[in-house]
Length: 177
Image (cartoon, rainbow, N blue to C red; front, side, top):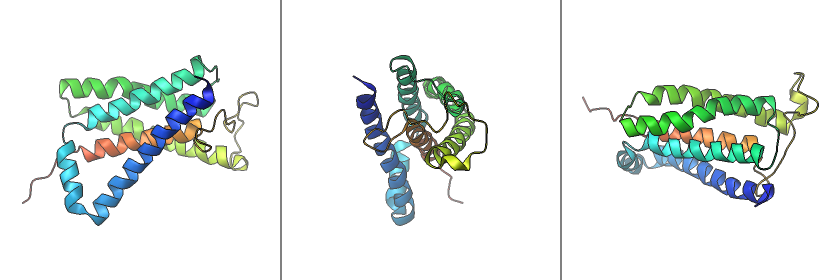
């Protein structure tokens, strides 16, 4: 497979991620009973599912740099710093039944999605950034556009959003007073 084909596959997964995140939000607002059922059905699986998302994102990131030989820009490195540990931390926490891993994962994914949002902004509107980006490897460079839209930072944003949504969905249910 070449880079555009991998980008299309990962772009398809990113599209699915966005649909899940938006779908959960819509359910929560428009169909609270259905959302509660989904949440109850997902209880205990959030860290494992979020870990799966982090593993796929990590493998995709590594493929782009190691197989396609795309050099990560500075903001890509920061996003990797937030995503890569999640690929280990979340499955390990799920395997051990350690619910406290969620807090650490939320913080890391929150930092990652914030960096990713900034990266997407300057990738889309390069004039917004006044920082001295590396002229040889600028953060505005679009290596691929999977499905004609999904750049690497956009896919990272979708992955972080899905990790956060899955962890939020799996939070402990509160007892009624």
